[in-house]
Structures are given as C-alpha cells and as structure tokens.
Length: 216
Image (tube, rainbow, N blue to C red; front, top):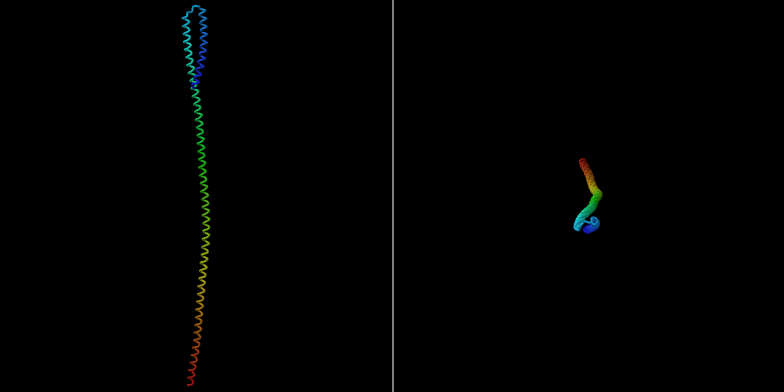
C-alpha cells in the first residue's frame, strides 16, 4: 500500500509540476508580452508578480498534491477495507460452511452408527431369545418324553413285579389250599375207614354177644 501511494504521489506531483511549469511559462510569456507591449513595467512589478505566481503555484500545487494524496489514500483505504472485509466474510462463510458440513457429517455418521448398533443389538437379542426359547422347548419336550418313558418303564416293571408276586402268592395259596384239602380229605377218608372198621368190629362184637346169649 505504501509503494502504491508513493508512486501515485510521484505521478501526481510530476503531472502538477509539468502543468505548473506550462502555466508559469505561459504566464511569463504573457507578462513579458504585456511588459514589452506596455514598455512601462518595472523590474519590481515583474519580481513581485513572479513571486506571487511562484507562491500561488506552490500553494496550488501543494494543495492539489495534498488533496490528491488524501483522496488516493482514502480510496486505497476504502478499497482495501472493502477487499479485506469481503475476504474475511468469504473466508468466514467458507469456514462456517465447512464446519457445519463437518459437524453435520459427524452427527449423521454418529446417528447412523448408533441406530445400526441399536438395531443389531435388538436383532441379536431377538435371535438369542428365539434360540433360547426353542432350546428350552426342545429340552422340555425331550425331558418330558424321557420322563414319560421312564415312568412308563417303571410302571411296567412295577406291574410286572406285582403280577409276578401276586402270581407267586396265588400259586402258593393254591398249593397250600390243595395241600390242606388233600390232608382234610385224607383225614376224612381215614376217619371214615376207621369208623367203618370200628363199626364193623362193634357189630361183630354185638353179634358174638348175641350168640353167647342165645347159647346160654
């Protein structure tokens, strides 16, 4: 910015000096023509006029240079401020936009990951529940079936043992009963035989007594 201002000042100063020189030259020529034409102009008037012109030119030139420098500087500052402001705004907008995009991408990615994790966890839990339930049902069915079979086997074995025992008892009772009947029958027959024999003997004894009585 300093170099630009210096160059601008030098160019303006050179332009003003050139213009001033041209003006002064024209003025001097004019004054000289007037002095020569009037033929009554004194050196003092010429010197004063020249001094006034010089001072005026210097003041005008200085004023023009000052104003030009001020205008150029203000213009440069305004332009620079506008450019810097526009650059800052552009950079800020770009940074904010990039930040928003980055944050949005991060948030969306985190949300997707979170949702995916939750869905996968829910699916795993559901599958685990189904597998566990199926396993429990299968094990329960197997256990119930095995229990039923075992109970049936035990019941059949028990019935067989009971039937066998009852059969043995019935057989034993039957054997005992038959033995008792045999003994009773045998005793009855024996008793009847004995009684028959005794009765016969008694008959014989009575007959003999009767014979004795008859003989006597």
